[in-house]
Image 1 (cartoon, rainbow, N blue to C red):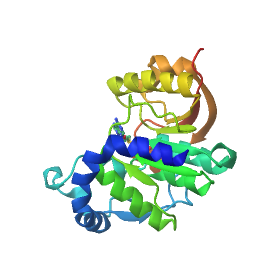
Image 2 (tube, rainbow, N blue to C red; image 1 turned 60 degrees about the vertical axis):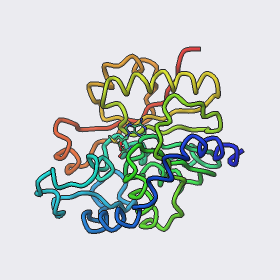
Image 3 (cartoon, helix red, strand yellow; image 1 turned 90 degrees about the vertical axis):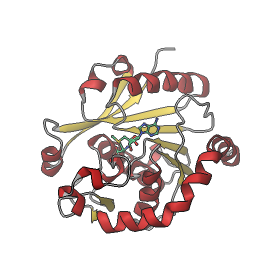
Length: 244
Ligand SMILES: C[S@@+](CC[C@H](N)C(=O)[O-])C[C@H]1O[C@@H](n2cnc3c(N)ncnc32)[C@H](O)[C@@H]1O
């Protein structure tokens, strides 16, 4: 079954992967020189991640000198923190399953899924730099990297995943709406389970998907995470339960 998933997903992404792999070494060096390894101050202190912190050059540097897209992957978002905490505390959710972390960023939720016994994990983020960061973060946590894909998978048929993870992906209305229709189809057609981590962003709370979600857990955010995310105090994990 995993071979089928791989073949299906790889065929979607082949043209892209060929162009993005050339500069992996450069990206890797850039990440290691411009991030700091942190763990302690998140909801998952047991995970080490390379992130952009106040000790990094680009915290103060002119943004136009940053050579890539905006570094979403260099932040551990509160939604992803709650989702990863939930996976680490509830091993049965991932054990033996084929898991897709969509919008994986730094890869923390994919890492949590691997640590809790997922049979296969795919980390998907449209930013190619996130794939390199995820691989490096896996190494930091002594894990084999997941399959990292950079194509836009929203809308495609992915029947072989048991579980889709979405950490802090409801930050934009158009993205939220396209995610909602895709998730609806995936759940109804393939029986896929969907878990969402969100800190109560306005785009999430006001979206139609919100009334189809059942809350599984809520976590108070650590003080430093609150300071970095002005106005947010807690983050929740939701199970998507669409009407039949
Ligand atoms: C707010 S960050 C969340 C990252 C991570 N899940 C976390 O919680 O720390 C959103 C991420 O989604 C990625 N993204 C946006 N649109 C996407 C799409 N259509 N497919 C895959 N990734 C996407 C961005 O590049 C970014 O890394």
